[in-house]
Length: 167
Image 1 (cartoon, rainbow, N blue to C red):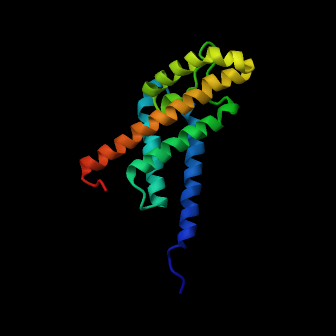
Image 2: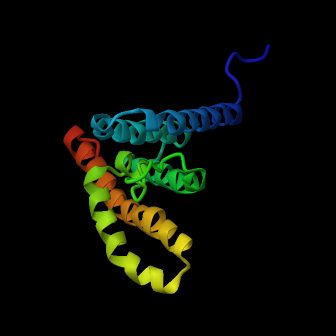
Image 3: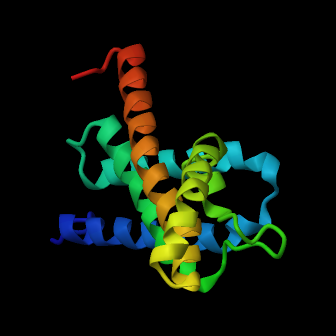
């Protein structure tokens, strides 16, 4: 008699497909939210991603799952840059709205400052369109990825320490 539970590999495929559908839906609906929800939606996306990652790989620690979730969201936002889904209308078109959600406005302010500092040099090296894409999407994404990774790793360690589950 066949077992009621699907095979392990099928479970992993189902979880991955759910993750992809949730991510696509989130990025499609994300620009509809107002600015006051940014501080809540970004962390919820990261924690939900970490839960899905830990369901796929149960032995993974919480800090690493949070880091991977945050990195996947930021890299997805960078990959979606050519669609202009997160580019607001003029005069705010030099901001990339996705980075307000993940890694968050507190890190995006620093990332935007770094890209503003580097943009004058980029305009001398690269063509205008490419320099603007690097300054608006790539540099803030890299800054958000590195500082956000540290932030979420430390938050995961703090949570494990507080719960008494540190390895």
